[in-house]
Length: 391
Image (cartoon, helix red, strand yellow):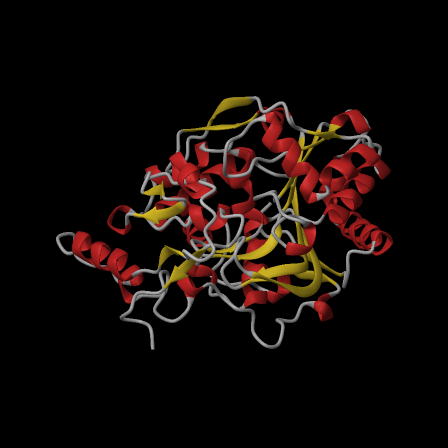
């Protein structure tokens, strides 16, 4: 729903009672939650990027998911009609998903609340009719749901600058199929268009953003946790992400999927304060400023003149080549690499090999999707700025 309010609620810690009260307040504020009833098939889509303890701020916190489950039950939803589902970036199979739910804390929450933590790993093809995509392969329960609740985590992102409500939907694409989309659209602009195609295909009814503790720096997995003490919710996902960009001090038009949404008339170029509702006094950017990824710092990808200038047709390829050459890129920290092969498994371009127990990247073939950086379990992959921009 374009133009719907973005509701704000304070939550300074993951205390179960506090989270439940804050989430209930947000649910009570959203008109769409009146649609929930005993027959409603509800899909909860958290951010389960990788096997990470909740304290690492990589995944949506389990107490937020628990509070949302209880808010749905309070409106008549039956346990058997509530499903929690996502897929990480690696191999998508029941064993991997069971481990992911267990480490993230969601296995216990789902068991205690009597709802399904989806591990069957079935997928379906759905039509898209988008600008970049004509169809998507997505998780079966996503396609079968009546009411999808997007539960993102507020984090920076080395490729897109920000990951919040819209970007979180990329998780409905199963496992290594995500790498195929990176391969198909290595250009950030086209990748952003694809994400908005996915948004308009999946059509979540609402999103509730976990910004109690977010991630700054080289997110979505290699950054550092930082407390913000907020929950945000809206039926308008691009507007919610505009609000998130405002909080972390990032120009939303540098976020490729928000720029794509703006081109389609789904949002403006910046967050409108008049769209804010609820505890608006709590909606204040933190001090000191949120740390952005190296790739979005001065001179980084998304901020170079090459990315924004409108070159004549004959010069456009050369400009894009120069942008690629100067853009930040992933590098292996040999002292930290354990040779697990996760980076090679996820790399859409197959530019990474494991030699003598260490990962090696063929830089000339790298498309700078940073999937390897996202999936490294020991933070052995850094994002390095081109030397022309380093001081």
